[in-house]
Length: 71
Image 1 (tube, helix red, strand yellow):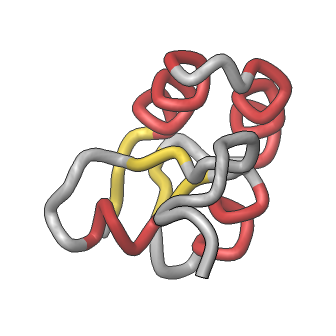
Image 2: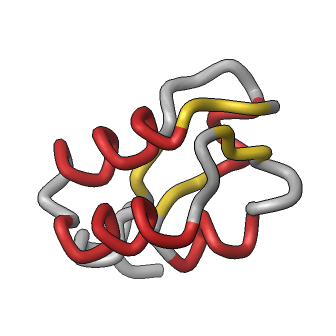
């Protein structure tokens, strides 16, 4: 799946990831192939697989608390 770099940058900025958004602007082309750029998208804190399944481009919770409590 391809998406516009601006969409990636906007998703990062919406989540308060300004440094990652700046990196995305520098390192991604105008069109982002989520399969080819999957590793970089993950480094930026994005979940490219979620978007490929038809969902909104999801920002991974790097700073979020663990889900589901303790086991």
